[in-house]
Length: 636
View 1 (cartoon, helix red, strand yellow):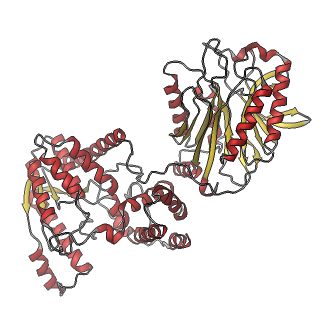
View 2: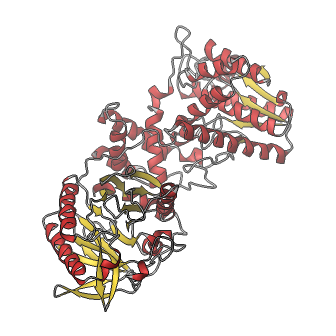
View 3: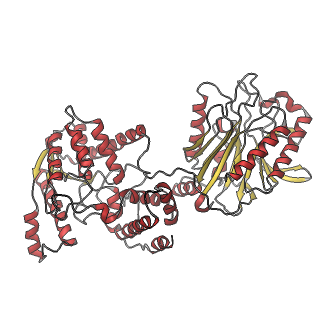
């Protein structure tokens, strides 16, 4: 439970219809195995103690008596286990029969949640045997003790308040207003569904949509345990299909016609972070809570943590994402060009990734407006650090795209500037570097004024996070198309363009692939033997790490210690702990110190869930202190 991680489990058990004793033995065996595997929330299907398909045998007192005895045995078997377990059974209450989920932990029955919606259509006829449970929590006497029973009941952990569980049963999820909505609004972070949903063509996919959709809408963990092949096949077949979804992301799903347990390590920190951020996620009705205990433990994560959270791992999804982002960027720029009446755009082109992406976006925007690409004035401005490789790539790219190329060397004008301010050219300091960046920006701005055009910004989200831009230099533009695209994603966008729009002769693709193979560099220091000397990632650290830090800091507000833990898990074997700590220090130090640059950003389109626009997504004082974040990094 430390850091918000919790292992949960959904079980499709072997069931013998109308044999509670045998079913209880299997359930107990499975609970022990799941607890041994580290599961702390274990969910079984609807009516699993008797079997869902008992039919009119539910009228038999013997079956009902044996069912309650079985529940008692199951509860006793959990006495020495660190877990809360949910099982389904028929329960007599006030002269009627309820279909309930029973919560049990440490040898005790905690309470009962009755099914709210009883299907009585198609193959279902539950109202023949059961009545719908009341929403209000009352008491039921069972084995000489009183227990809470009602739909407005939550199961809350005393030691970890973030673990709060609401229960519903099968059909409840399929209705227009599932009870889990009210439970989540009342504070439930985990929703469990004890289900007996039979199979037919297409139903599996729709069931998956329901579970993922509910987890997404409720910003919660949804554990769905479904009945399996042990149920009667007299008229229908049950194939299992248990699922665990977190905020709409399927973490675990059983194979068709399989039995047993599925596990997932869920992150309640993610759940709570998303709920806190949404001011429309309002507090709902007050539910009654029954409490259980769990001992603190540090979970050895089995959860997959993507080292590239901004980049979809699946090729098809990545292709779709790239097309979507390029669309947002180009349509955003199209609107700005249309609004200002500009017929020209000015782009500083260096032969690097960011300026390449900005040029490709500008080309798409011009095509959308049916403007002549010759109105895109791409300016290469070789300076002290420019290599022949990047210069030739820039020139070829512009010519291949049919834009207007201008080459304006800056070395001489920068030397004049050095003389004016009294700077020694041999001193390769920040003045040496920034003077070149500002000279380039001045050229772009002045050409834009002269030609009646807009300067298109090239800086990306990762650079903004680190402040890796010259204030009033490449930091400034008239519209920053890359402003919310992280560096790890820039690479894939350019690769996508190379793959999808190679051109008839493949020349564009060859140029883009060579640009992708070029080290990231501002090229402000003279090359060594014709090769790039100043490599950005040698100076500020790997962008894949910084993007990882940025994603979890901004998306969920995680602490440095939790981000560090996730990072070591995601990049296992690739980075040593000290290396990650080193670049994490750099990230937090620069992120806080460079906020003043982000406070006056040019306009630019938001493309993803993480953005740093001071007008839209992120408002932070420029003089905020980084001490508590850096102190935690030091304590790792």
